[in-house]
Length: 434
Image (cartoon, rainbow, N blue to C red; front, side, top):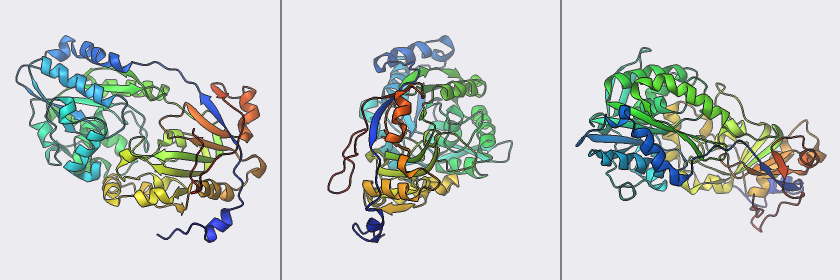
């Protein structure tokens, strides 16, 4: 794609003013487990007889590790590995991430390594393969697959996070059940789960999970939940027989601890960095309102959205760009469709992989969104600027919000300074730090 800095597009955007911005803090309830406490919490959970008795000497135990940027995932995984070792068993880690990592064994190892999960750091083997076995057929007629290495083990421990999904709603969203049928199902299994569309996935997940629970050696799950600050706030071991009943209850807890953009609505939302380490769609639409399907709603109400940078942890996977109105040339140049397309082909959701307007730099990304807004007060443009969708305790807001924030209109939101011009370098990249 030819993007000409200083060309006609730049000319059309050159005189579009960007409002002055101020820093603001957002405060939410903050239950948390400190990282150094996590091994003890896990040891206490798994030390209960109903869990510890399931792990016997010389058993080969598979422990799942996913592709999301879960806080403290390396500490959590290592603590489970160490507990299994202490019981005299032989643990190994299995990448459980469906089609992520370009749907290759090597790509999935690369993702785990980026989260600090390697054979050296875990002190046990990591068995990465895309090979699966078919366990049976769900009540809705869908074949159910599972990773061969996990299936051939003596027991499987599901380590995962429970969180609202970014494309559908149901009693089972992101959590142990999805980890069983999508994560452990690898590309082949993930495709079966998503094959009927996002309007049916909420039914496919539990019906397929029942098959896994019946026919695979699932021992128990150890899901975590995070608070509004992306901190671990809950870790709970769940017996296999109780997963279907307990997961929806913990999903409600996860919803209650989700952060939000307190102002509720804006004209333009700018996201400094997107990536798979923040959400499967680059940004979490539960925050940004940029959903890829009509089967989930929420987040801030916004007319135009722009994304400025792609995280290194994404390894070129820029899924989610299609949910923006504009992206920078930087993101476009870093896209690796071999990493992006296997995921959206498998999920059947192509919207996330679309290419929106591509502009030369950060400044033009703000300007194209501002210029193309309709039905707004151009003298009081409401702009929200966030670092990413995972860390929104500190944000920037345009001057239009300032007096209301200072006056206390938005509980939990406080101004940290006065409105100032955003600073850009000679290349048009934002210099002002959020």
